[in-house]
View 1 (cartoon, rainbow, N blue to C red):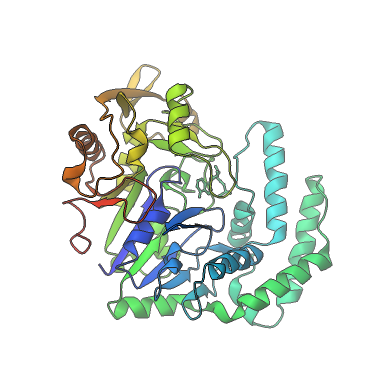
View 2: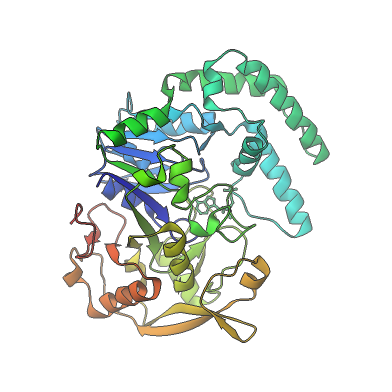
Length: 432
Ligand code: IMP
């Protein structure tokens, strides 16, 4: 492998962190290209558990270089807290963690705005259910060209620009009826944190393109998932960046024709956090069972995730908009105890069968799943290490997901640990 993108094929929380961790064995560089510390990757190395939000999970492997690309939004205080946790695990990050000078900063006033907007949306009945990390407001500033970038920290005038932005946002907070921020306290906090980030802020576009030109391998690590993409997701119940594979090019400055293939990660069922339509959501004992066995609580906010059956319409759409070459199917073991399993193969909208994802949220909300049922395998799979080790019904379930979505499963994850991963006969040649 030289250059490969990894993305989420559902609504985030697909278990990308673990697959990235498995894939980074073969990659020299790992680059985040969008989002900020709204993401949450839980990775188990030995018996130690790391919950990473912004820093690529590749940092957990010695000798790998990690990049936060220009498409990311970086909360300086959050970044430093996370870095301290990584260091506490005995991991040295010196010279192998770099922040793009073109990345945007997510600052305390963005967080305050996120909270204020969500409260207003709640009153109006259109709450998004954000992670309240200030992600949306930070991208708003980027798009209206008033945002501060990491590179601004390196040149004169940063404190003045910051002061002006705090004052402007205080005006907005006032309009929202929310307490204004203490200007001096924000300046003190942000200036102290950004000062510590300075040695890590560089031109990562040149750095990455050089690596690619030298034939070094780069893994582009997506956060969130296809259905949370600002353009292609279930708008407006989405995050504020391009979570799909195209974002890897715009979010790092590595051109599309230098990116070779795409791995999509999906759970063997579906979950989502936050608000918005979710056709296969379960409100019964089976949903509770998935939540309990799958430990479905958000890594970032601790919120309970909504759970449901595998939605092949969503996954098929993810194959189309990302160009998924292989799936990594995660948390298969969570389904071990079920007598029968359901897969959503199409939607019914007011009596009409549709096989694609509608562009309007109102239509999506009116979709009810058309299910196909398959027998479960009713035995533990966590000990399986090869494709042949999996029970027959389990292999049939995976094969059906492949047929319905149009991409082969290269990886199947049967537990949270690194070695609880099956590399299938259809996995990429460099991994097999
Ligand atoms: P935001 O990214 O905080 O603005 O939140 C927007 C939507 O994306 C909400 O529904 C969040 O729950 C969801 N979201 C953001 N990050 C993640 C993630 O890493 N996993 C799952 N959902 C996420």
